[in-house]
Image 1 (spheres, rainbow, N blue to C red):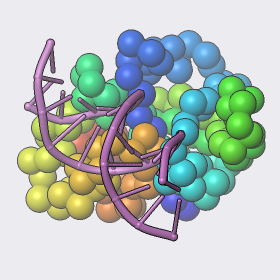
Image 2: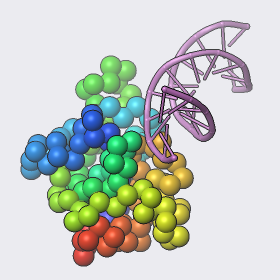
Image 3: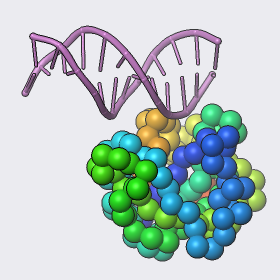
Length: 140
DNA sequence: GCCAACGTTGGC
DNA sequence: GCCAACGTTGGC
């Protein structure tokens, strides 16, 4: 079971919008980067990820679940990129900010810290558990 | 709003 | 196939 992180600017697509879209989830369109694409290709239905607000907020705010495996992104005219579908599972009790993550030595190797521009990232299990705890959730 | 980092594009 | 120029992202 792998863990992931999805980044979004809240002004474009926020956690609240993700929650409002309900159980059937939404298409994670718009990824145009091969590293991010590779992450999505590796995802399996049922795996979970963090929902991270970039720019405004700069915090992990919720947990999402992959509900549809990698398939072509119809918004990509070139046909080179695909996407997965995700749904909101639950919010963190308290958002875990980038500052808080950077302050934890055990999280210094997170992709979020070292390659902040990557829009879809893998998260190590130890990182997942720790951030869930920091966010006030017992599990993931 | 600035700018560093990085991915992509296109001329050669 | 290299690499300079350019555009975009995202933290600050």
